[in-house]
Image 1 (tube, rainbow, N blue to C red):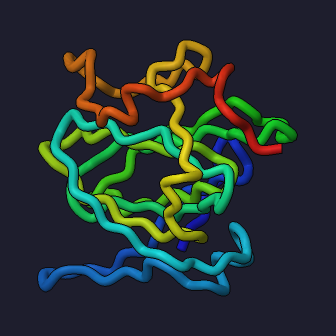
Image 2 (tube, rainbow, N blue to C red):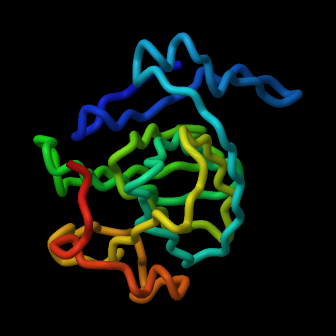
Length: 182
């Protein structure tokens, strides 16, 4: 596994070694010893799998209580994945990292606790799989507005100026009004 630094030191891109031939491929997607050394010592308690159509944007979500670290990857299709630092005491507070994750590039992204997370589906559809360090708790969830001008995230929308959003995501908060981690 190759661990790649991003503009935010706590957020890492993981690039597995892929062994393939005419029969298909094999890759290791997680090893606790390497992950603990390269990213963080964490226990993952929940795995999730979602499927979304092209043009759907999910996020930017985070939980203040029961904060979730997420190890995310795409097993079908392609997404633009974003992590926003919501840790007020961090040197990178309010900054974000955006990475293309796809079934083809097989990259993963480590999004630690204290970050808002979301993705936009670029391909016709995408299946998104992720491990979480704590359980989903909707009563503790907050959402940032995907189009917040302060964050200035350059989503690859193409000709689609208005992605498809859930009602919750349409009502996301501006960064300046959102609750932060200490």
